[in-house]
Structures are given as structure tokens and as C-alpha cells.
Length: 119
Image 1 (cartoon, one colour):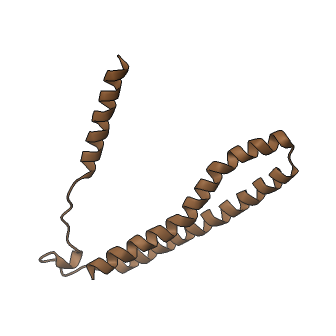
Image 2: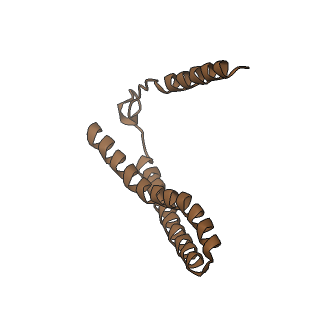
Image 3: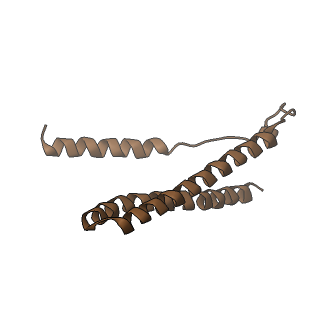
């Protein structure tokens, strides 16, 4: 196939993908459903989920700091060629570590925004 056809197909696929995200969700909280007066256990599930996310964030932060220490020591002890190689591996690491640190703050801001909207 020619490059022009490949570009057109790629653009059409991207448009289809973007349009598939634009769906409406009409949902109610469990207490607003008619006839559903026996909603229990949601607070327990929320607490368990928060505990799991907190543990995963803590483990991710600790591991990222440990890897940074190891990379820093290898960088200081390495030759010029090894330093260049470590610089290449540090860029994806720094991006990943920033995502780990920022993900918790971003998720907390989004959660507080949407709980503030609903109340």
C-alpha cells in the first residue's frame, strides 16, 4: 500500500478511537435506586481499596528511591562510557519516578474534586 493510504487509515482509526471514548454514563448511587434500601459494605470496600492503594504507593516510592541510589552509585563509580549509558537509562527512570510520585497527588485531587461535586 502507498504511504497516503496508510496515513488515511491511521487517521480514520484515530478518529474512531477518539469517538469511541465519547460515551455518556447515566448512573445512580446505590442509595438512589428505587427499592434498594439494603446497601451495606460499601464503606468497608472503600477502606480496603484505600489501604491497598496506600501500600502500593509506599512500595513504589521505596523501590524508586532504592533504584535511584543504586543508579547514582553506579554512575559515580563508572567510567565515561558507563556514565553515558547510565544517563540514557536515567531518563526513563526519572519519568517513571515522577509518575509514581505525582500519581497519588493527581488521584487525590481528582477524587476530592468529584466528591465535592456530588455533595
